[in-house]
Amino acid sequence: MMNTKFLTLSSAAIAGALALAGCSTSPSAPPVTSSSPASSASSMPGMDPGAGMMSSSAPAVAAEHNEADTIFAQRMIPHHEQAVEMSETILQKNDIPASVTDLATRIKAAQAPEIETMAGWLTAWNESPTMGAGHNKDGMMGEDDMKQLDVAQGTEAAKLFLTQMVAHHQGAVIMARTEMSQGKNADAVQLSKDIVTAQEAEIKEMQDLLATL
Image (cartoon, rainbow, N blue to C red; front, side):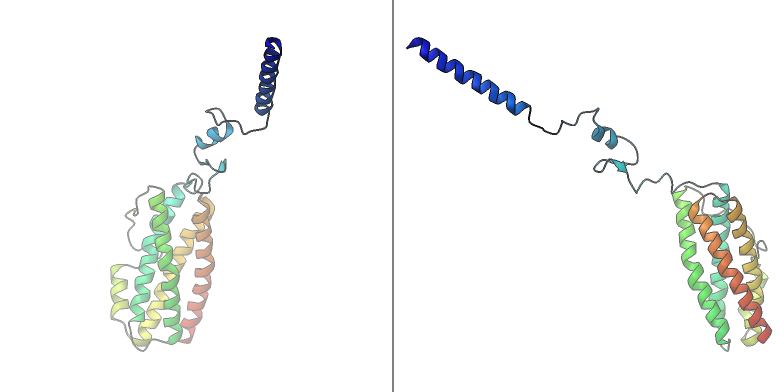
């Protein structure tokens, strides 16, 4: 009886050991350790710990810029601001041809959002929002020019607005072409291309309008 009980217990023990061994060989995910791919990915800058790939929010590429990009934004912001001011001035006047007020409305609608865009770039780049650029450069109107536009009325005001804005746009095109050839930031370069396309078309439109007034 003693030998039979001992054999029975031994068989049970062996069977239990085999069962445990079988469980240990079943496939299972290895624990994440400091050297595992998931842990390594989560510790790398710009990586999404959950997906193990580059996160779309990584700021490095978006922040790439050079001095030409900075100067372009710093100079174009006040340039656009003056174009918006000139457009608002002509829109407040009476007896202005509808073709001129339509143009002024479009200039204001296009350039106001671009001012905010460029200001946002300078903030993201940790650059100063201004560079202290003076008037009478790149088509900018001086104080006397703005006063003349302010007091002019009717057809005289329309002609003055168009003449001043042609020069103003020509200055913007020069700045934008410089950015196209020297800039590095993709968004800034694209905006410069958009400015050249839009403002060259508006220059032609304004010249045609002047011929009819």
